[in-house]
Image (cartoon, rainbow, N blue to C red; front, side):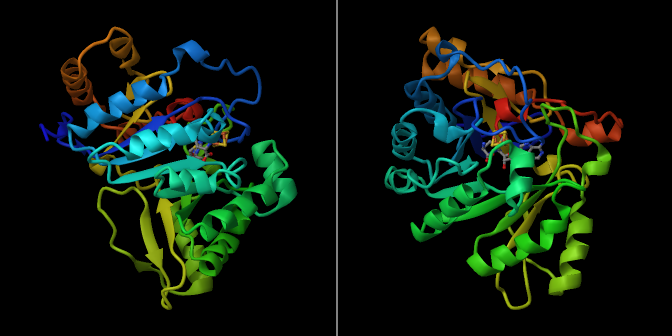
Length: 331
Ligand code: SAM
Ligand code: SF4
């Protein structure tokens, strides 16, 4: 291994998220603009070969954990081919995917057989009408069936739930029960201003503290599972150790000082931070047949410029809706 990928704040990147498309078969209100999205054209997308080449270069910096995301990753053709290619890379210890689950049920076996280790499935409500209101699709039973299929397949399954005040915060306890019934960890994510719709406001954010208070009132004291300090999800269980819940408190308890993530978009742009508007073009290097060594040096230079993160924006009181597009950077 060569030098680790260190930024100017001394943080070392250890996890890479690679988005395979900006397109999606849902229109979640907290993410995707509901009209006129201009998608990346096919010719601007990284090919699977290019993604594999980039990931191989990242492993030279000690990156071992990889997440495939989007847009909706399962709408990209032959995604299993990519999963297989990535899982065969030496040094990749963990390969996961985040999906909305709509197309998952029929693909879960082939994804697992191709080398996928774990899957995060997004689900924000158990209610059919509400699901449609949040995502634009009448899909709650399809997603629930996919979750059950994934559990049956014995792949690691985690649920991502974005909580928004007045939209689904009355279902927090139902999600806790779901975790206790199924054994799937549920991660509650604070609503971030990465919404294509521009609806974000502080009033819609339900804090980790508020959620924890509500949960412990009903289920008793929560026990910290003492997970990886760099993992933004703080995980907890209950007195009887049944069920696991986590929180991603990006707004009320930002974790930028321990951030170990970097992101590459479907068109090969490298982002150091979800809240950074600058990016660095890796596709251009690949299209011009630059060597792995040249790409390596470029990545190192870019990561040094990783900004402090959302903490600085909060400090400056400059949080506003739609600061960046989650669907194109990848969550
Ligand atoms: N389409 C896939 C999905 O929904 O799981 C993968 C991409 S999505 C951008 C990745 C994750 O980001 C999802 O769990 C989604 O709920 C979350 N997300 C999207 N917009 C968000 C926002 N504004 N605030 C917090 N989380 C958000
Ligand atoms: Fe699509 Fe995922 Fe964004 Fe929802 S959160 S619109 S499923 S990319």
